[in-house]
Length: 171
Image 1 (cartoon, helix red, strand yellow):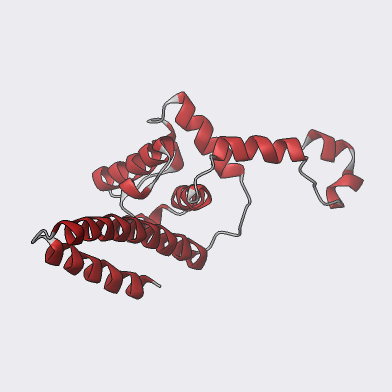
Image 2 (cartoon, helix red, strand yellow; image 1 turned 45 degrees about the vertical axis):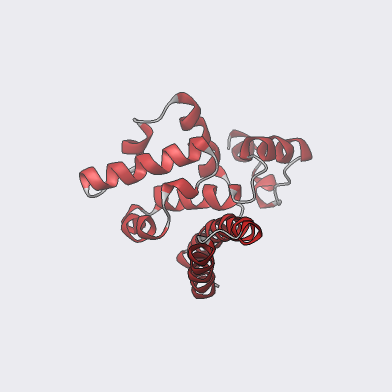
């Protein structure tokens, strides 16, 4: 900001992020397929606390793969449940230094424009990923039961069908 104030002509130029900054951000983010979704859901909840009730009903905390982001999300949910509303400052006070650093990094990201539709797309991706994981686990059990002639095969097939029906609803 000081540089732009001293050199107003540069304020009109597009900012280019160096590859090293992008690489550092990718390392901090992690390689998980849901990392970007996790970040954007947290950013949305910190920017728009009024949407917490709707989001918490659709995204359980255990869907967050990153432990720090899961804990931040759980803190947001707990604060909302306890107070009925929260501010980013309320959340910031409860974070460990590592979590505070993660929140600061997330809040300056501008990966995608955040609006309700984008967030709901992330919620959908979370739910589908979880359902696919459950389906895979149940289908493996069903295959094992089928090979062994186990009577629990019917239960696992029913669970697979139920999960498959739910996946169709979310897609």
